[in-house]
Length: 256
Image (cartoon, rainbow, N blue to C red; front, side, top):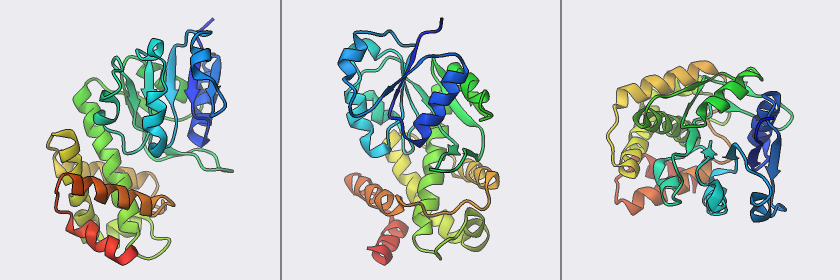
């Protein structure tokens, strides 16, 4: 009998992972707002704890992880970087950069393969494969960092650029008709990612990765519901580092 897996946050993506784990013969324990997590920690010994909350709820979720579970935590949020988990004293957490969507009433939409790193990464990859979602393991922390920054560049560039172009614009429209805007936004985002990580990244490699993701779903709309909140959050972070982000400020002046 396999050890259970705890899924903290049973939203759309959490439900996908839960189904994948069940297919892989892992018992699944969901944690909702009603769950007494400390009581649960005293009754089960899980294989891993996958945190599936929204980005804005991540810090509170990570704070709630009981001490005895800190050596087997996995995360999958957008806008995720090492600084988000390093303050919580986890032991080698597992991280997956999710490149599939799940919206209410729709099946999962895969853009590209989702890379995962950490000691529980293979469980995520094997489980997702059972529900036809491609994922792969990474070999180093540096590879993971690049993948996280790439996902952040994709999410933030498409969402924020989408605020300044026509409603319903797709990533294909962005690439073909608004290339300068795409590059100016992504350049501002990259400045912030470098400040947040203390690392430099190859801008051309990130653009190549972003275009590859575009090709996974050319009809994908740029602007999601959370785009305005993402822009506000990004500007606030940029201000905390005194970073010049002129394109983001211009878009904010149009929107707010």
